[in-house]
View 1 (cartoon, one colour):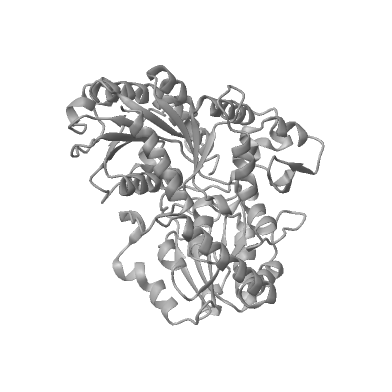
View 2 (cartoon, helix red, strand yellow):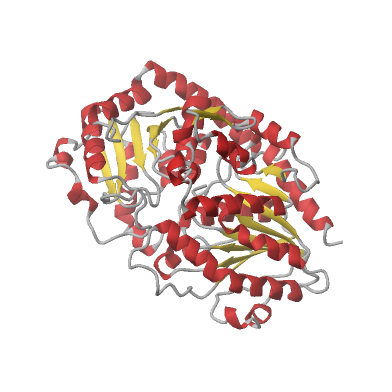
Length: 516
């Protein structure tokens, strides 16, 4: 999920004999500069609103596409608050969409009073807060423009639950879209669990495995208990209970005991947790290249030609997502560990940071190759391939040469690795990623997690050992077998009669019935 990622909202609205048109939306003064794509008529319309960071917009848009494909009488409109620095990256996600999905982009919010390079959580929170009036006006306009039936449902990302009271005011169904583990969802829905983490080394969340308190998300860590971030986290969780349900990008058999516990406690009273709807694993099916990231065609596909020359399951793919970065010292140790392992690797690198684990989402002006240890590229020629900033992860994970994935444990990456049956080296950086790493390494046992030293650095020797283990070790072979079984279950969930497909249909029928 990422507490530092973006909030997204979409709305289901009934439309009689016509779709939304630009005139309907343009009547709202605050939306005069937005981009709106007019589509054909549909019986039910759905709207998504997002803060412009890549990963959450991407995952909720995949849900929109899945919904639109399975139920073509549902019309989808995506509303996106924007920040100038990341607008182009997010807009690229909305190219070549199905005909029953619209998109509109709100004018960039005014953040002139922000620091020059604000911490990403601060930037996201400020963008959400500043965008709420525009979102509210957009919802009212959609409600009025959808004939007498009006909107039927609003679905909000976990970071923009401030919109849920608007749904109550408009008298429409409301849902939270949650893109992380069911274990984290349980933690959010049982706030009394937080109190147990103050004096205990481990905490037992209802229906979940025991987890170390150090693996809980940053806002829940004891050292943050007096912070504004912890306060915002608690307030957001309380708003879950305003929703009619939680739509989670996961599948039942990934965490069956946790989902069962959530289902047993659902109900209709104000103290019962909302209904939970697992609809995943939903991942991006193909690449989404921006002008900044793709370079020329030859550069884009050179690493794939290199993979074509490698043996099956022999290459470790290394990537920390669209924003994950390492410190200078850790960057250096990882590079030397890759070299020391003697195993093949494909590494997508970003420049290291002094302190932050979250870098700029855009492609920078620095050449990340300049930060590699002296002589590294010459010494590893033939052993490895280094790609600056960006590569097509879906294409890479689908290549037969890939035998392992060293990643930051972002939820999108973990689901992609699962669907491709790739064993994982879990290297969490921030937000919910340590909790995800614990689930995949300690719970599902499809990942290895290298242990940092007393300074918080994973040394080169540890890096080399875990790489050899995941690619050629006996433990790695057992992990590969377990991951292949998990892959089969994940694929089954998305089949025509699969559990997640049935859940999406259940939701769609509920929304359609609400138009009657």
